[in-house]
Length: 84
Image 1 (tube, helix red, strand yellow):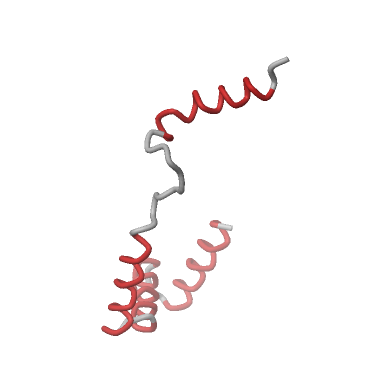
Image 2 (cartoon, helix red, strand yellow):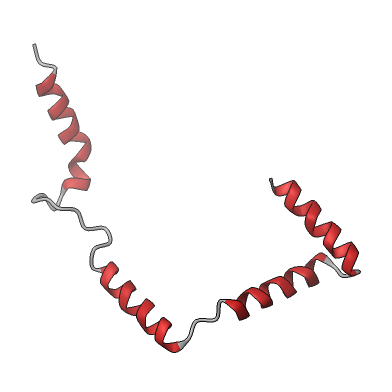
């Protein structure tokens, strides 16, 4: 896939008689113009990020040391399950 993209970029650069860097610069500038976010959208994104940040990395449970004791807990559960 990467080689196909590179080939297309090289072909387009030859057609425009420009370097690949100039072609990429032009493409990025056009994309940034099209996707320009206004102040209202930026405020909404900040609000959403704040709301999501409160839940990032939070797991429901009662053991605050769960990450540190996961290996041992798993072994204990498996031991109980397969004890004969």
